[in-house]
Image (cartoon, rainbow, N blue to C red; front, side, top):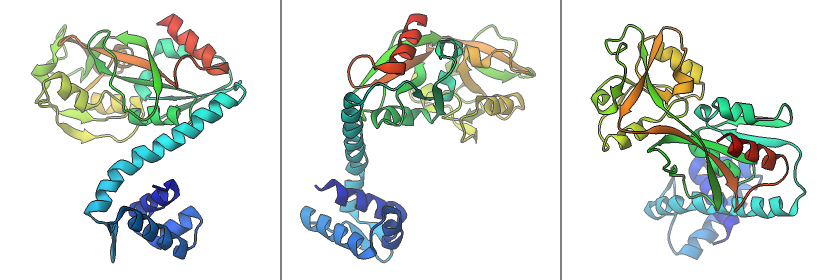
Length: 290
């Protein structure tokens, strides 16, 4: 398939409008219509209903493939450009908010770094497509187990940190005086659903056999301080790495004792092997501190 036609199709399907897609892509509406017609002829199936504009069953199936295909093309272009270009002296680091622990912050140089805090699922794609030189992802894992990352492109990961996890409770909570908590005992508690600021509830369910941990309040942001403020006010529990949970006013951070899980942070690099330039220095500093 012609990737230009595929990109046009994805844009029309996303915007549900030929004219809006033409405006966004810088084409005429007639050109957009020709692109869609050519793609439908190539695949031998109608992809879009016209009034209203919406994907057909075949079009929905194509959309499932289109995102990864276009991402791989962007990653391939970025990888070739990265190899051919001179090493940069500045660095863009894409990171999940809870991956910015004390060790990571101590490894950053005094100047020349741009931090981009992203939803953790977007970090690998940012590295693959070259919008970030390095990435930091984190999650809940058994000790020394690697994280499972989306297969967006050839990437290399290195473990750069593990630390205990704690349940953050208001200091008035009935369990605030416990020395430790079993995660399974909290499966039916009120939880904060904050996938990009705390550890996602899906990770907790995975550690509990796929059950429980329903969100009482959803927070769609990356600010860990906002999340801890919600927990302190009693809107729900949250699970955080110990360094992020410690010292929050009006809360108690109680360690998780069962199952044996840790907060793991991994460095994400494009391609195989270590990066070059400023990224290499930061990567080496992170690995040494690990």
